[in-house]
Structure formats: C-alpha cells, structure tokens
Image (tube, rainbow, N blue to C red; front, side, top):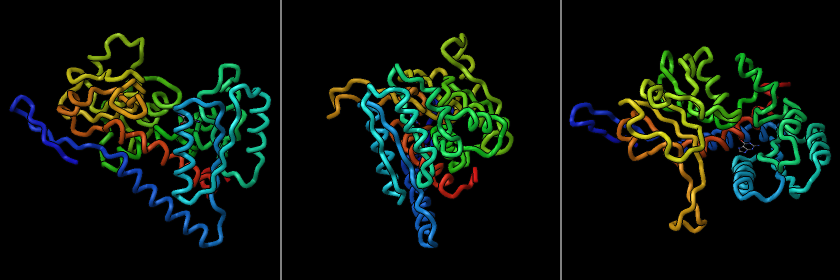
Length: 307
Ligand code: GUN
C-alpha cells in the first residue's frame, strides 16, 4: 500500500507499508511448491520437530503457529511437550534423540525455558546441522564471517523484506535498537556483510546508549528490536526513513477477546508520517519469522547448507 505524506506542506514523501503478511503468504506458496516438487520426484518430506516446555501462553501460540504452518507447506511436524518441571538431563536426552533421528531434518526448542534449565546448554547440545533456529554458536559464528549457515528466523525475515521491497542498503546508515542474541546482534551483523542486503554502516543502540535520539535522527534505516512499546517517536526520525518494527510486546486491552494486544516498538501514527517504508505491527516482521523458519527447514531437508 502506498500513501503520500505531506510534510509541513513542503516535502512530499510516498510512504509504502511493508506488508509482511503478503510476502510471507507468497513465500509460503513458493515453499509449498518446492515441497510438492521434491516429493513428486520421490524425495523425502522435510520434517521439523518442536520441543515445548511448560504452558507459557506466548510460547504455546508460537509453537502452534509453527506446527500449523508446517502442515500448510506440506512438511511433516512433530511436537514434543514436557511439563515445566522436566529436568535438564531429560531435556538434553530429548535433544540427543532428535540429533540422532534420521527422519528429523531440523528442530527447535522453544524459548524461554524454566529457570532451572540452562538455555545455553540446551542450544549448544543441538546438532548445528539441525539447528534451524540458527542459535547454535557454530551457526552464529559462521554467519558473522559470512559463511553458509542457518540464519535465525527474525533477522532472516527482516532481510527478506528489505530484498523483496528492493530497499537500498549500500552505504546507508542503519541503526539497530537492541542488542539481543536473537535479533539485535545478528541483524546488525547481517546489515554490515558485503553485498545486498548489506553494505550498510551500522550503529547498535541499547539501554545504556545516552544519545539514542541523535543517532536515530541520522539513520536511513532503523530496525527497532528493544521490546519497549512505542519507544521510537516521530521526532526521533528524519524524513524518508525506512523503519522495521520488531517489537511484539503484549499489553492489556479491554478491546480484544484475548484481553491483550500486541504493540510494536514504534509510535506508528507519528513515524509513518515521515517514513518512506514502514512495517506495521501486527502484519510486518511477525509473519516473516515463521516463514523463515520454514525456509530453514526446507534447506535442512535438502541438505543445502550442511550435507
Ligand atoms: N522464543 C521467541 N522466539 C523464538 C524463536 O525464534 N525460536 C525459539 N526456539 N524460541 C523463541
């Protein structure tokens, strides 16, 4: 969708809404088509397993969506559930089984895990060749030096959006808000890789950065992944900025059946008036995350990254 922003009656900016839902639907079709071709030629159906510990509302929803999307693209999926008091040893044994199951091409352990289990220990126990989340240090390390690897789903989805909207990145100042291992650090790394979509000059801001507003005002591209609802305001961005909103904070709401609504890190009403491209929440980065996981699973099934 294209909108025209009239700024102070002077500049006119054509603002395009980045439709993650539509791009994800397109990618879903492309993946399903490829799965049909593989199986028609007698190849193996890609198989994703998901491990879910406990009954966290957010995790339940995410995993249910992942399993449903597997069905929609024609993958086999397996959901393995544990109560929240499962021991670390039992979870490690499950990871070991999945590592050694030749039918499972890739698997994920949904995070967060209960406090008594070391997430890092679990991630490092996953065979990196089946780590379709791209969280294992081998995949993170390979990504950081530009080698073939599984790239974690949210950063991969963000780059796919930039590509499909043909957004220029070379020489641009890209400001990443947030330094998480899942989004901030990897997306910053990808934006500075050689080639497209990369070649950007990258600044990473976080909770200890004193002059975030000043830095954001010099940004051509802002990727907001702080988890602070409506952090980025209209007076923090310049005209024509490209804004990718990764925030998905649940806030209480009396207007929805579920009793909450999802808020992004961007004050959309203000920032969209100055932006050339912007992702909405929901319907922007969110749908891209699941479809990127599907693509990693397809790559795992095809043994395209690791044989
Ligand atoms: N929790 C929140 N996001 C993710 C994700 O992408 N993968 C896993 N395994 N857990 C998550």
